[in-house]
Image (cartoon, rainbow, N blue to C red; front, side, top):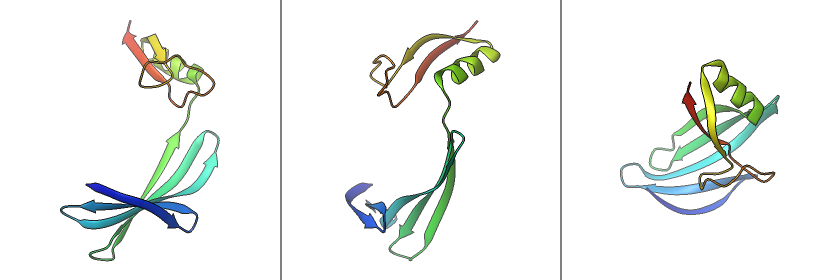
Length: 105
């Protein structure tokens, strides 16, 4: 796939992708709801060759470091390392990820 650029569809950014098998595909995301640590959103795919639009509805749950550590302990894991990104930097205020290295006791 080759991504050609980004433009707006209303307030939602659009990616245009050139796929060798599918042709041109537009993709954009639309936020549905944010509530109690959960984010619901849709990903839209518009296939230029057919005009067909496929919508994928998704929900992400964001948990705290303490919640994740407790969940791991509840099933017999202990946290060996915790990083704030995939480059193994320490967790900090600006960390966008929580990367756990855990082992079963």
